[in-house]
Structures are given as structure tokens and as C-alpha cells.
Length: 636
Image (cartoon, rainbow, N blue to C red; front, side):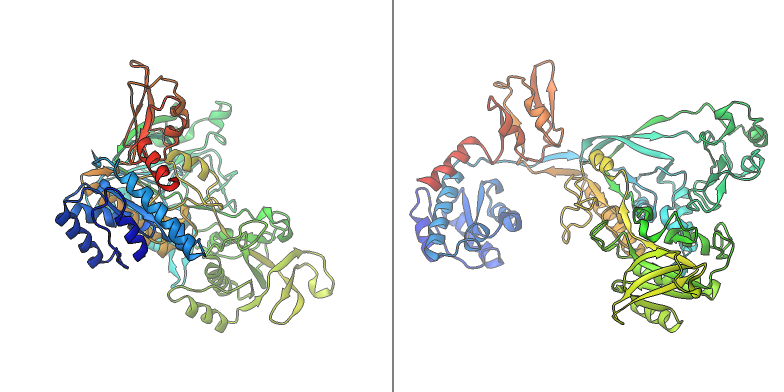
């Protein structure tokens, strides 16, 4: 490093060159400030570690010294030299070339200033599960106007379907429904259920969002939620599988998802309603509604436009479809259930009022709970869904409590890392739950002994015993994993979000920015970012709300000036850059027949600069003369 500093000091234009081991430390930064002031320096080059890590640090240092922070350039001799070059002599020569290139480039740096744009103080929250609910309430309590958009007729998400929550066995509805009611009653929250985001434009601080509002065929302003239309429907017994009860019960064409639904406004299903099919319905629901006249069969999908400054995406997850693993017999054997179906079976407000009765009418005497269905599997999803072990133990406890059956839990590894989780696991063992370490190979109905007659037979290798076992049970519960929503790709395109290889939305940084995204002003909350339990979901919703508040309360947003610009004097209007821009930051000005760039949308990727045939598109900090000088420094 001493030799490198000596070589740099001899380069043209270099006034002072120093070697310091920890330049990013306070003493190192103070040294830079003092030298800038003492020698009147107007360019600063630091050769050390990654610009990704410390470029902002040194820019602030240069600004502290009274110079424009963009007259600073950083050379990465850690990743580009010392970590990848074994020969010390070659490494030193390479570092000298990079420093020379940086010095020549620095001479062409220009003073730049961040752009500032005002921020709309309203926030859009997409998704009405527990993540979206908590985010919306946090923002609303901070006196921000919040638009909460949920595509289902009610908010609540999957948590509303659960009976108890682990490890405390709190009633899920008891802790969720007060927050749902608080959303409905909060004056700062505009609740938009049965709605879906259709189009997003604009940029951080000024998003324009078009929301599709699907027809309920019931006027929300006139409906009182009395439910008389449901009672009066000529379908005395429902014929359509209930989505909320996962098909375990039937609902009428006019229905309320569940008794505590928010808002408590029924929906008319046009696919099941006779009025929509044949127009021969006596319309007893209309008669029951009376003078309120809330039922309106003429409603159509309409569009609502919103303007917001920040967006929180909390679109949640979907359960793994157990039919994708036919060896477990789901959909083939009637007494094979998914975990979500069992949640509804054991729930006192469920289709069986909490009585666990199988589809064949029997009460189970033995039950097998199979972990990792659709998780930790090379054929489906390689990741761990994080919640399956604990909710499987919870369901084992509830099933044992309600049926007295002998419960077997088949697991790969028991993962209980949370607060109180290990204690809950030990409690289950004390209750007599059998935990067998091994993944079930198949569920069959082929008896090989009288004890297996009329049973579901689980064939599994018990890895602790080192033997293959056949275990007959009456009922099988498949603990399905969590997957991204089926339309997560479409949602990602709307908000310009990246996705991991597994389909979860990508955060800006997995440790330092777990709710931020690469689209400024758009934040993530809950399971759309990855599998997590309710406490982690609520915590992330709070962080997303805090990040939104931090953005809004600044009053304006600063955009880094490392953006492209278009010299309209030489722009030929070919529009190649418009098609190439991944951020839709360039539009065509038809009056001038040239391309026009919106700096607020530009992320400085440089795609338009590389594609422009006339050289009209350029980028700050990457001008042609700067790059040519840098190349000259390396080669000469």
C-alpha cells in the first residue's frame, strides 16, 4: 500500500497521496477533510474496499470538507485486486493501473446535485391479511390516509381461518377480529375490499394507481349487514363450495364469507345465482331487503384512481396444492386432509362446529400428521416453510384434545426455533404424541394384515430405528407448505418487483433492508416476501409502516443524480431507448419528435445510453470522456 501511495503521488494532477489502513474510520475521514481544506483539493480518489459498502461514506466526508460529493471517485482494490490476484507483484501493478485510471477519470467529474420531488402523504396497502391490517393501522394511527385494497370480499386473510395460534394456543379470531373492526372504524383508512390493483404508474412520492372494484351486486352504502337477503335466498341449502371453509361446507349464491367478516356486506355470486343464469329467480332477496334497496343486479366492474406516495405490498401466500404429490392420496382417499382443512374442522365456528368427524362419518381413533408436504423437497419446493413443524404440533394437540385419538407426527427435522416453541414441543411429547423421524413414502389402502383393513396405511422409514414401518391410521393430515401467490409474477410486474428463484418478492438487502425493494417507495410486508409466522409477519408490517412514514415525513424525496439524460439537440427520435428502458422512464415527445426522460423514474442502469445510436443518451458519472479517460489510465 505504501508503494501504491507513492506511485499515485507522482500522477499528474495529484497534490497529496496518503496511505492509511482504515480510511473509513473517523480518523481516516478526518484526515481527508483536513487535506481537502489545507490543499484546496477539488477531486478526491479513495482506493480501498467496495463502493457498494463505503462510497456513500466517503461522499459525505467530501461534503463535510465543503466540496461537491460527486467530485469523489472510489477504486475497489479489495474485490478487484487483493481478493482475486494471488501474485503480490501482479496485484500491486493491477492496483496501480486502477488508481491511475481513477485519477484520470476524476479530472472529468462534474458537480451534481440530487433531485428533490414532493411526496404525496397517502399510502396504499395491497393485501388485507394480518400483515396489511397491522401496516394500515400503524400508518393510520400516525395520522396518514391509507387505502387498504383486498381482492377478497373481506379482510382477515388466512389467519381468519385458523382456530388457535401456536405456541400460546390463543384463539386466532379473538386476536384478529378486533383489529379487523378497528380497520373498518378508523377514519384514516379507506377500506376497499373485492378490489384489485390493475395499473400502477408514477414514481416514489407520486404513484398513480388504478384499482378495479368488482361488483358485489349489493350497494355497500345502503346495506346494513342484516343478512336477511341470505336467509331469504331460495337456495335453502347451499350448493356452492365455501371458499372460507376450503370446500368442507356449502354456501348460497348470496353469502357472507364468515360471521365476523369486515365489511359485513354480503356478495352475490353471479356464477351460482339463478337471476344471472336464467333471469327466472323470484328475487326473494330483493323483497327481504325491502326499502333499503341495497341489491343491485346492474352493477359492473368500475375503476377507481388513487394517488399515493408510498406502497406496501402485503399479498400473502397460498397453501401448497397437495394434489401435486399423488403418493399421499389427497383427493383420492376421502380421509386425507390438508392442514388448512383441519383448521376449519377443529374450529368451533367451522363446518362441523368443532367436532372432528371424517368424510365417511367416523370419528378417528388414530391420525397421522405428515410434515413437509411441498417443503424441503427437490421435486416441489426446496425451502423450509418455517411454520409447518409448529402448526403440525398445534393441530396434533387440538386433534388429541377433541378426539382422544393416537396421533403420529412424521417429520424430517423438528424445527422449533421461536420463543416458547421448544417448550410447546416438549409439552406435546408429554401428552403422548408420537413423533417419528422419517418422511412418509406413500399413503395407501392396501392391507397386508387384518390390522390394516379399512385403514390408511403409511409406509415410512423410521430413521431413528433404522427400519421401514407400516402404520395404519384412520385419518391423514398433510402439513402443506407455503407458496407465493399464483399471480405474484403479475403483481411483481405492476410494482416492478423482482422475485427469487422460488417466486417470493425480493427485498433490497436480506439483512440490512428486509422490507425495502429495488423500486423506491414500494415496501414488502408478510409472507409475500417469504414464509414466516404471525409474529414475524406483524413485526415486518410494522417495519414497512415505519419505512413508509420515514419517506412521507421528509416531505420530499431525493433522487441520486446518477441518472441518464438526453441531449434533445442531437436526438433523432428513433425511440430505441423507449423500448429498452426497464423502468418506463423515457417517453416520446410527439411535438418535438424526441425522447424525453423522467429523472424520478430513472435508476441509472445505462441501458438507454448503450442502445442510443446517435449518442444523445448519456449518463451522469458515466460520461464518454470519463470512461475513455479511465480506459486510457488502465492501458497506457
